[in-house]
Image (cartoon, rainbow over the protein chains, first blue to last red):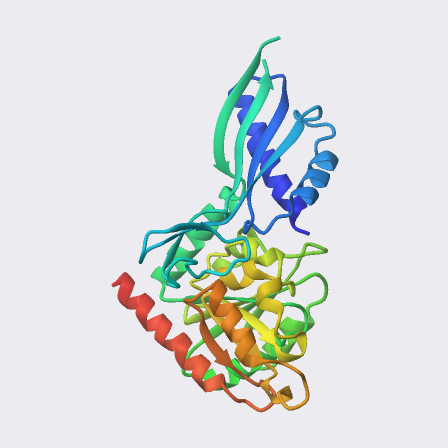
Length: 114
Length: 223
């Protein structure tokens, strides 16, 4: 349950962005959470709703886009989704792979009222 | 009132990553190999460190940062081996963060060659936090069961080595070592695998040799 500390780090960025934009409030926060990011979207949402009270994002809605784990095979160049976390190319069986997405924990965008 | 959308695209844990990168750069430059040990509670991290301390003797100086929710019992155990140890008590938090490690850096004795960080016992949360280590090791004790790599993929995906512990229990627990190793390597083919028993001392010398080799490689990389 480290979702609350992730949300605490998120709010540091949110406060900074709101100041930069001279915003009165943040109304929407969109995150991208990879399947292998090590964070549970449902818990992030709970933590967000607890944390937002009394902050610039107190009325904000949280949107989370879950990103599947996508890999590219360096041997045959095939691209595949592997939500079972088996790092083996389904086309040729190679284990020399590159992770394209699915490990990210990103603040994608925000909507503000100025 | 105007509504405005701003594309941010920033990593939420960027501040932790930045501190971790600073720690890594500084310690590697000073010739210190930092090892972050991850496992569930009771997998034998402290016992393994006790055996490593005995194996190192005075030839290679080590220091240990112990992370726990409460108590300094683990740091006390390590100090009894004549090794410098600090205890970080997180007071409820389930993982260590880079800034907690950064605070201790000025206190590291200058003769230190290896810094071990024993993370809070938890196979989930610590995997998301880079502490500035050069090497991440995940421990899996035989009584925990051979299905753990599949159940906790992030810890295995982000590690450099997998250390099976409590190998002395092999005859009495239903643990399929081949399955656990195969499934861990499917998640992370780069894992170096070790089989150890802190009770009997098996596999410790091999592991210590690996740490020494990795430190030599690290120094050559920075030369």
